Length: 145
Image 1 (cartoon, one colour):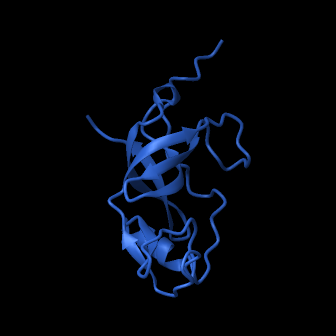
Image 2 (cartoon, helix red, strand yellow):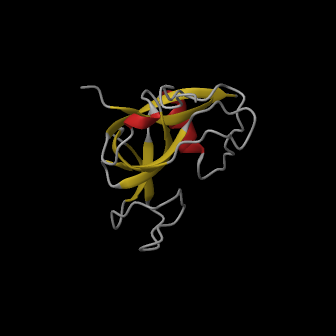
C-alpha cells in the first residue's frame, strides 16, 4: 500500500482553470498581483460582505471600500483531494475555509505541509502564487514556529 500522507501540499502549476474577473472583483485580483490580500468593508456600518459588492447588503450604503488584510488566518475546515476535478490540477491539494483575523472567511488551499498535519485551528498566513495570465492566487501556509 502507498503512503499518501507524505506528500507536501504545494501550489497548483500554471495552466489550471482561472477565475473570471468582473468590475466588482477587479480590485481584489489587482491587489493579489501585488501580494496584498484585500477585503471589503462598509464605511457606513462597518460590516464585511461575504462576497464583493457595490452596495452594502446590511445598510444599502454605496460606501463599500477595500482594506488590506494582515494575511493571518486560522484553519476552519478542509478536505484533501486525491482525484482532481480537472486534469491540470496536481494532487494532493487541500481546499480549505480559513477565518481571517479581520473577521471574514477565505476559501483557499493550504500549502507547505503534509495532509496529515492539517488541524482545526492551525494558524496560517497568506502566500500568493502565479496561476497564469497575470492571475495570482492566495494560498494559506502554516505559520512558522
